[in-house]
Image (tube, rainbow, N blue to C red; front, side):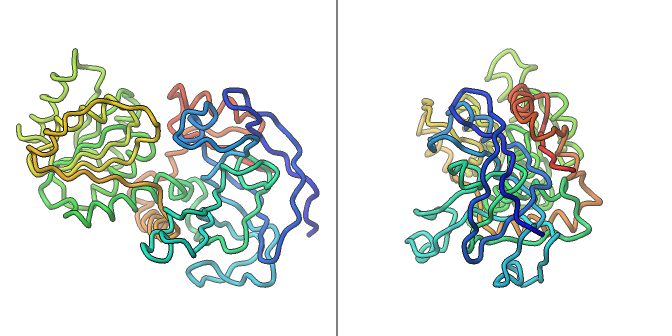
Length: 370
């Protein structure tokens, strides 16, 4: 099969402006590079903020966004025989892949934490003419990029959650486990039940926690979170002020507060408020904060409670694989595929972004079917 000359792509040509449909020349592939045909690219909340230049990173435009991508191998070089696990791969197989980490920097070689790689090359954030984003017909997967084959019994809709929210939460829960983790009988509060919050809930549900309390302002998301393991739901919009809400949640936890609070909302006000929900010797896991904005907090609330505060960012191929295995093993128990609540054609990517921002779609996805 001949490699196509061009690929249609929805391109962010300028921040805070609509994406434009462009024909991008398919770059000349280097030794070991693959070309995939995008099967499904889900729209991350990060994309919504990136398009409006609201993130702590500011990559130069033009950009093809999309870092949550399931792709079918279209061109496979002779040098690539297997995925990172050793499973054989062929043209037509569906895969997912991590960002490209250089493997030589301090984070990669000494810390063994490639997610902090100082010279990483990301997908969904690079120059549009490198064709390395999911909002396109085709995408280049560079030589050296870790990738994993998606099992035949896992749908693309079920798998795509592992590409970002799922692997982010798996990495975060590993960090939490290094600090004692969630113990049987613990009370867990998850603030914000978008995709990241849902994966936090479903992972917490495997731990023996006595309560998993989902907090959000969307009744639809809160109801859906029950299917993922939430034992209690709290609509934050139902309270006249923060103090009333905090008291209600602390009372749900027996009056002493939550043993674990997991912040997935991205709200600065919620970030500060969560410290008041935390019990003595509680653990505060922060996954959802992406902006550079500031918020005042009282450091004594951390010290007085002997609280442990844990930040966690993204994930690497280990976490993709672990999340994919978890999804495969539990897909009959939890509705992983239903996280994709609305599908759009590639040319409708701007509407997908707007619907994500408005909360109309829990998770939008761009489909690339003939």
